[in-house]
Image 1 (cartoon, rainbow, N blue to C red):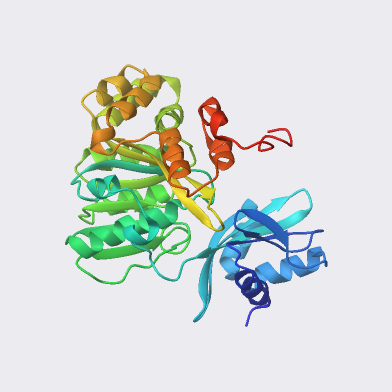
Image 2 (image 1 turned 120 degrees about the horizontal axis):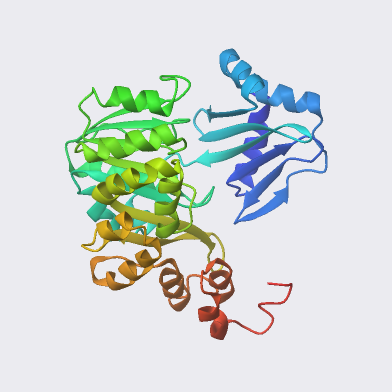
Length: 358
């Protein structure tokens, strides 16, 4: 058993989702959204290097030393899988490990909006699932791919860094490719995928300009492309995609995006009552006004499109937060902290909720 496995097991026993390792600090775990120390003993540089190197293939370890950043997967057989990120900070080597659920959770288990099933039934287009790190994007995408796998005969290629969820054989054929192991980059894998007759592509992350351009191209060529970004709402997602490109290319990108954007699902995790966490969503679906809104650069109007599309399953993040407050799932204070228009939630706050400078 690898030395780091005892820390990961302790994390799971404490109900944690993430393990944080930093030189000079004791190991910490995130449980119900809050970081908690797992011991009083800080990690020294020698121990840190030993913990990380033991579970990393030699070639990838050399990549980490060179690039100062690495994503990889680690498994404790029979217990759990983890996604790890190695990095450097001003104290030296560091890492964060997040548990990957052993079982792919369903739509019902995650209580996902029915509108997301509409996106699964599309034949083509770009669907972006967005949210900050740790907001459950991968879990939601896994549920969507699992829904397709259980209901449709499709050829699906996933490109991830690292592979998180391994889908069993159902109705679809699913090929998993890992950047660094099976391909050199997201862009290289995408170029190869175009020749493999896929119906659906899943990109673990749309990081670079070339990857985004290829994703837009695949979506425009008749494939259904799922990807992720680290943005908080639909309008910022459209802005992020366009602003990734130099100014002289942005008009062309607007045209491409306007013709192929099929949906944006922005996701946040909130603390539940009395414990645990739940996802809230902003959902943008196709609408007759959306292509012109993107082409003309009037991105601020996307919010109005979402608000007018409630009967189709669209919803703003603030309205989703309000629904969770009203059904007793989350506290008004939690919604206030996550909301774009905080004034909406002020009348619902309890005395003392804003103490502490919020």
